[in-house]
Image (cartoon, rainbow, N blue to C red; front, side, top):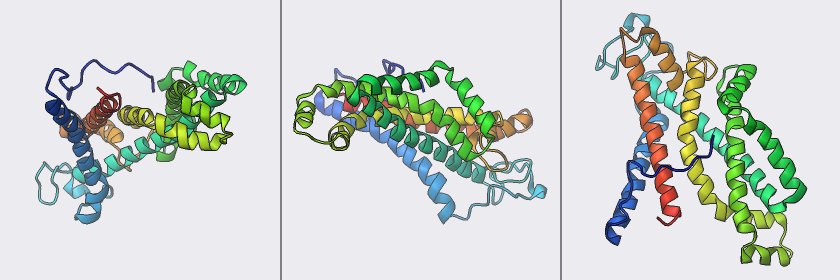
Length: 292
């Protein structure tokens, strides 16, 4: 997950020349729209299958294969195996979101902790931790992820582990840079001089101050992880069929792209909207927390 400068503008950029009330409303809108979109997507993927009579995503009837959209009982039709496309999109989104959330939680917990410890202790501890992480960063990220995924084999759990190698060094660098800026602040110096334990300094002083930066990076990272998970599944190294994910749905749909292009369009659209939602929310939170 390469650390890059944020783009100069975004879809929901706030006009800094506008009056203060208008800027406040625009900032709220910039956060509210993508957040609302993501709430709808999460609700559809995780809640709707529990409360609505949605068919199972696998084990379809081959006699009902390749039905068009709006067929009775099949809102978006069925695939060549007779599985309900709408159901597979919801359950595939659940799989893809679980992977992205798990990877970012691992990156946030492990990478954030390593970066904070490295900057807090400095010296030999900083050198050892960062040189180990530099080994991972030295490899092309996607190539390393493909190698790990290939060696572990295709499954949801292994996909999470493979992508964690991709995210932990990035979170560690963000955490280290933010902690270094805090280390010489008066409240940090006072905490050290008063004999406060390292654990208490990390939990009470460092974590709350670097949390917003890590959370913003996690929001942006969600979209990146979902794209890479989709690429792994497309290549057969992610979540294996018949379990659905947006990536393997696109891979399966492209086999009959000329005859039934909607098999690719629907999961691609779902992935696009989710990535846009996470990216825009991350940009809006970054702008809010940076005071712009």
